[in-house]
Length: 461
Image (cartoon, rainbow, N blue to C red; front, side, top):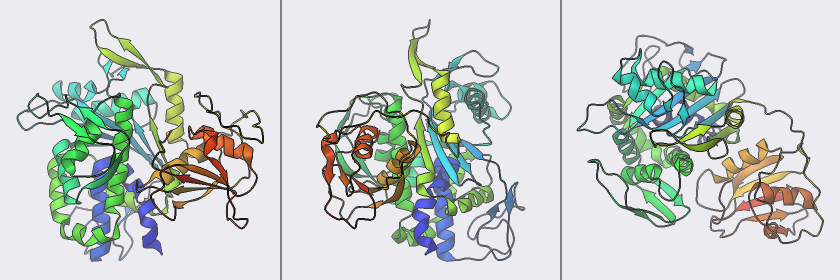
């Protein structure tokens, strides 16, 4: 049943323009729910009409949504700005993400960039990457702040950026509220007494560890707080919020609400989002993603492994990129097929002693034939898919991804249904787990050799 696959495939629709992509997904589902007809190409029921198909967009006779005719990888720079009502700007970017979709290989990716990354800004001196948008608006750069931000990211990543989308935080809050909020699992208690309010003061934030249902305001705070960590953890929380939004908008019971609120959602997008993507391009890119497997979406963060801290002569604390390491993160996101790894691991004894594996990164190996299933034993949406994608990138033969029989597992387990101790130990190392989590299964007819059940204690590498 094709509709059932949308929940997984449609996440790449969000990849097109982050929060604008939420709007695209909602519009798509609403159109399919209403099953309205298009009187002419480029017309979406209930929304303003366009003159005709945009670049790389085609329409088939009687089609509800357009097709994407381009064959090249499409990359979008998504920017979140702290735009305040009492200010006229220009603004720095608080959130920077690069979103990419390969319409041929059916592979997508999300790369988060820390705002303190110290880089060359074309036409200007070196500076924090989040100042490019500010400078572009301030000095009238052709295309304004979004254009200079795009050129800066493109220059430093070495990958073409085709489009941009910029959204302010109020628009994010309204969009999340419109879909009824999101469910988030908070790994550890957050106590941020200096969380900023909208008037340059403080709005103390306290969130206990555990499961929460956040409205738009709390989802924004959770994504923005820098409590107890750096921009690296913050970037991962933002990606977690994206997954939570996906789970919400792709829920079947949400469709009547989305259809009813489609014009309102479009109004929010019009007021809060600036992009050089046309609506039919967004819908066409979303259409491509019906063929994208969830496990073919890669997530990456330019973090402490690819940067080093530095204090500028002015006393600013910034992050200097380690170019070689940053290229590795970029290539992971942008390469459809990773190169065949050549490094192998030392053999592990059959006895599987109970010990912690070294904290150093586990090198990838040539994929073996052991079959692995990754099952989500928690209520946190998307956990099994992102974990499976990470394991596959490290040569693990993951052939099944899904939910466990229940979602209240407290502890993560690696269950061996067939004698594969070396692979089991390597899986534990990749997932930063003790080998003590490896247990033997008692079902000789199990479909897979090894089954990983993710529990509430699990933290993604």
